[in-house]
Image (tube, rainbow, N blue to C red):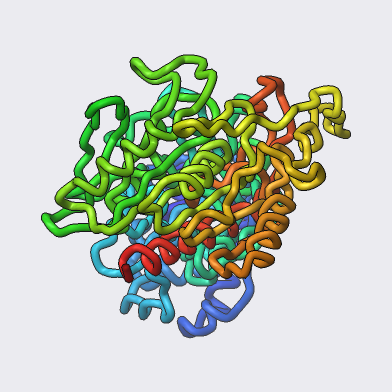
Length: 541
């Protein structure tokens, strides 16, 4: 190699003297290959332009003992120079990894499921570049874990991983984390903790998904068309700088809402405006009606994901959709009773009753249905009031009036956003309050899921007080799951935290509550508990 350098453009006298000294050192010290591998030797050439073979390296070039060993044992074949042997000594630590001559090293033990059969390397930037490996390889359900690993990095190389996702309006959500590869140049997020400086730190295999945050402040990730998956992009960048370094690898992955074979059936029967999601196959399935909160429209993501887990799920609209009322003066429970009857008459829905899943106002509706309607077996309520709010209920000749809201009780927080958690009148402080839903009349099983940091509804307080009343009536048909660091929104797993946003009643920017890491844990646990709850009380019956 020294002769190659001396003969191809290395005509600087000072450089020639350095090369001559290096040649003498090699003759004196490289008696065997083992000497080369174990002897620390580094010689830097501060020459602005050095030609090696057909490559011209600018800035300084570093050669270590591995370089000389590789060249001496391969008759000057520069194609075998490894990343350990030839690197540009620049601030970006450019490296090119090529295999060391000889037997391939054994595969590292204890790989995570990210390396299971069926995974495929993601798009790389060249044949020698690092690559991303995912499991599942190309497509997964939105609520499912995604195993992420990177192979082909340098030993203990520092990299930044970034995920990006655009919603249906084009708004961008991103998360990033800093990592360091292992000695073998591999990075498995199930085994390697994220280093400080990114969107999260610590051992968080799914952190790059649950930490996604909008680039547009206070924007919420909403899925309208569940038949089209979100496209997730994963990128690997060199280094841990404030700005992304050189792009090393990129992959794309679809996060879907419908498993193969799950059917989406629009329902327009009688007054019902809904979408039914049926699991694959011709069997019968436990039936659930999913009811969303204030805001109107038809909300399908949660129902579609539940159908993937074996539930016939009806996503039910109840205002501001098609010919439904835009600004209802009352919510007539007869409309919801019609939806229950539709489900029970469907040939693929198990009887004798159905389950209800409701969030916020939708949870309030579900509790009212359980109190007044028949054939309600189980109700999962997510951060819901236990009294009528905003829109009163009516059923036959019975009216449930709404609680009074006191907007002047809103408090300004340190973040300069309003906290509306104290504006709703307390239904347990006024004896004979007509707004409280009479849950003691219900025969259904209740699962109250509440966030301890809910700043919209005092959901933990309401659930605790109403369960005290049920217990005083000799009932044991309830349970409460209370999640610390969780605000008003409890979405299926891996939906981004929405902790500051538009208040559902006052339509002003407000604190909704929640902390990123705690909320991500609550999502996963709550989602599994919802499924177990309905399996227990719908399938068993």
